[in-house]
Image (tube, rainbow, N blue to C red; front, side, top):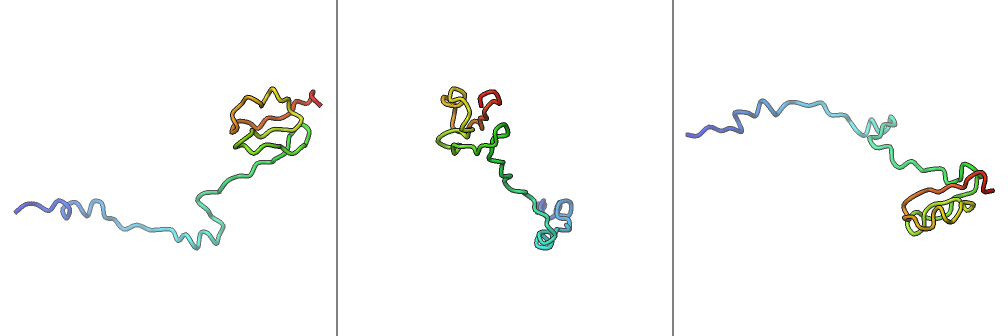
Length: 86
């Protein structure tokens, strides 16, 4: 008769584990993934709201020079104005 390797090594791998109750932890405020952090959608130099969606056009300050962002990828940026440009 051949040996049963599954039964022979079962005690080495099948150990009792203590699991965390996720529902109780969620009520306490714990979450494994914190989620997407929304960025501030204003220019730090002038305070204007950024235009562009990041899919078709890059996110940019309306006061930023067009040469800085016009030929770049849509998902690059955000592009802010320089303080001297105002």
